[in-house]
Image (cartoon, rainbow, N blue to C red; front, side, top):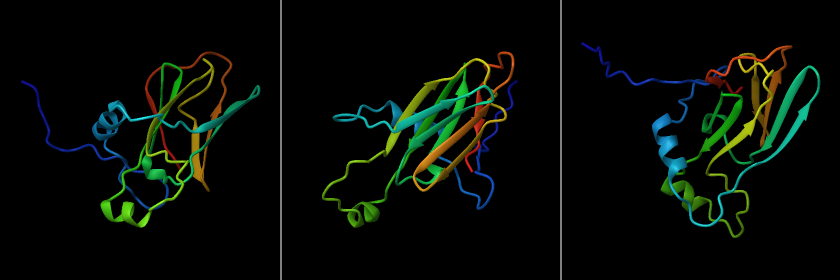
Length: 149
């Protein structure tokens, strides 16, 4: 007999104020919906040397609780889901709105020797910065969530 719990998994950002991360089911369903026109993807810069891999992504207008960052099978997945209430949409009546990253999932292949367990991510002034230290040998391919500071 299986033991099923009605408790909902809650994920929090740390450090600082505790904020609920987007629910995984809602994020997945939003990402699977077809969007009209072109789906915008953030621009990225990748820097690599012997010690580390650094990825910077320009994602203006987001907040850290909107992000879900994971690695699996040496692929980095940066997902974003921003939902505005009707009042916020009325307030933000843009005449030109070119960087609307309301929902995206950007995937980036990683070298086999980056350590996802020790990865560090931060978001400040519209820039997402992810740092992966490197190991001498290939690392695990298991799914790993990266906490955003």
